[in-house]
Image 1: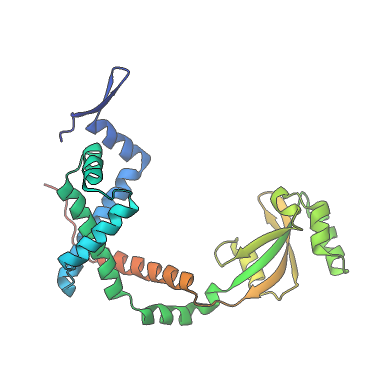
Image 2 (image 1 turned 135 degrees about the vertical axis):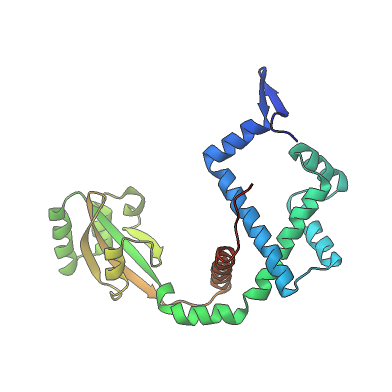
Length: 252
């Protein structure tokens, strides 16, 4: 396919391959696609280095699952998909093989013990806190509500009557569960060092003033979902190190 090849004609206006590339570059998608291709090349090099090579049976199983996921159960469905997207069946298979190779490499370089060790080292950073919040228009109002909370009035009742934050007010200010790095640094420091029931603030946020109540603190548990999240992170870190160690050359 050449750069000037016409893909479609709309109201007499031709859209060609070059138009598509310009759009992808301007929207930032092109760079992401290049990064994914770089990752695939590095994965292939690492696979050769580690002796990882899925069997043909493994590939057929993966390709069948991929086709079902993409709602292409029949051979004619896949053929129509390839024609519509301007790729050959061989090219589709090549991408599928690279995807499978990435899965196999990930299973090889990131072990369950790696995830466990990372969790053990960073457990404190992964605990979560459930918070409620009252948002006020002025520091005077915020300080008055803080004093009333400290005097024994219900934080949640005050939130329902006085908070300016519409989406939390009806729930008594309940904001939800947060992790580290989800709040501004100063607020995070106070929240994650507080005890259950503490009311904190006022803090300035986007020209408003906010009070926070710590409803509960939950220590991190290595659930199935968190295990997958950490494995994803460790693999991304490994892949970035592998890319950084690769040799890049400018095209001649």
